[in-house]
Image (cartoon, rainbow, N blue to C red; front, side):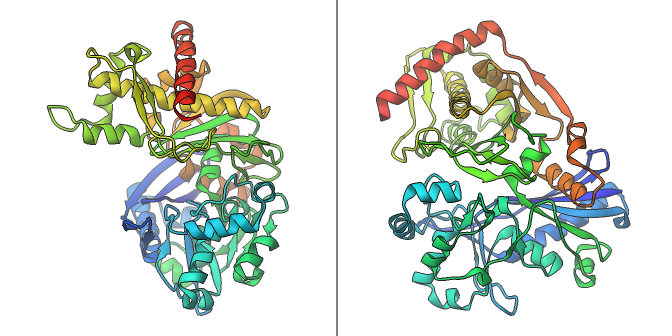
Length: 490
């Protein structure tokens, strides 16, 4: 028997076929583009996501040569905050407002004035009122597109919409709804104070069901579109960060998962909600019962390598990342005194400062391209260490770190992280942890997996142990990095 895991990302849908031993036997990636504009608007056509899901399902079945009759259940993982407006006839009223969209600045300020920030944080788990949260997007619609606002029967985030397309059910889960700005993460219910600001009631929102719960079955009409038998159960699923944590075995305190992709996202599992007295870190429900996650986050990580590659190309042309990291590996730890400050779009965790900017400090005539590459890689690793330090300051244990995302494919970068952290860094066999996690959650929902078997399903590709001598070097360099940031921006 097999399970389908579907991960709806920012620029692609990934569909994976997982067997009953937790092995990812086939993977399909369907990419798409977003509609962007100069005034911070980011939108997309809703059909892109549905069509990409259909194409991905058909592709993995073709690649694997497995009969669709052997699919036991479907699980979902999704980006958060992307808003869909559905009318009572089931029609999407406008383009999807993607999570990256930050047009609702005035609305975020209005909400910030209406709700005391400490009450906001202790209820939603969100440290700030960001224009990206759906609460701000909905208020923007009310003020700028009142006809759309009035005609909307259900305000959904993207995963909710796909659940509806698959099953006809209008449901959500606490993890993907945790960044809406109108979920009480402790009660796991909609928050009246927030809804009152919007002027909407519970009837405008989907029902809240736990992530591991079967929420319906695909009907005969949908089954023909997907190339699957009718009646396959669909498991609710959750936000990609929490589902990815599940797919990497991060389901109990002590394990930290970090994803170094465009941005840097860190997940620490806790047994209860943990609120930082200084409001530096978000808190959200996990996709498994009776636990939460803390999620330190920075907006710039791997994107810095892309920025450097595109703007300072080699004389031989634009290099791929493997070549860039090979060059960095030729440079000694500390980049011969060159230190990068990686906050090119402001800093978020652990120091919220939207005015912070990037810098290279200590440049000499002896520094070459490879030094700058290594300095960037070290700076992102320092950011990771700083945020793990934040978690430790909140009494969150850190026994091991598991790395995901694009950077987890580089042994060079993984070794630098282990040396900077002075901790073992583990790399799961499957880097597409959100796809695997969605499949595992589907297995839990249909009871072929249980929480007690998850550890046995997670396979580790390699462990990178810190080198004592290099870690001592980085101990002093990290202090210099923190000192430079403090002198520049505090």
